[in-house]
Length: 128
Image 1 (tube, helix red, strand yellow):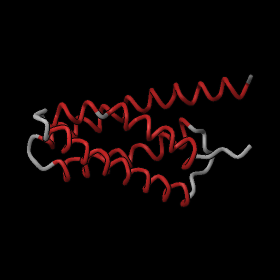
Image 2 (cartoon, rainbow, N blue to C red):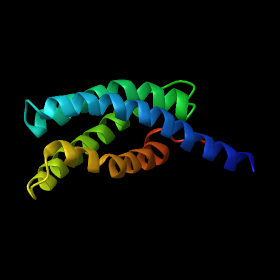
Image 3 (cartoon, helix red, strand yellow):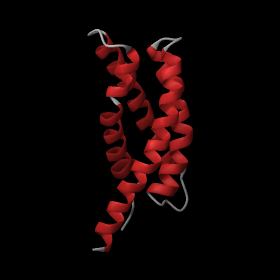
Image 4 (cartoon, rainbow, N blue to C red):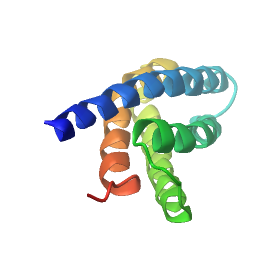
């Protein structure tokens, strides 16, 4: 029962910190999409996301006492994956006639789900 409550709490905390992270990351992304290519706009916004997310997701969401270099490396690889998916999907969706800004908004939820699953099961693994 306690394990179920903790699992639900990590999802809630991920959502709260995720909303904050997505909000700031997407403000950066939306502004940059107006002036530079999707590739560079997503790269810059993902760097912001990386710097903010590693600490807050590791410490506040998944309650890791001491963040380790190995976790940082795994988080870096996850962020690289998310960045690539982000700009590729923006390009693909915008090729159908959608604006790049609308395309970026559409893929927020799928990328968030991918990020949560990988962080929970690959990056910030809790040893029981």
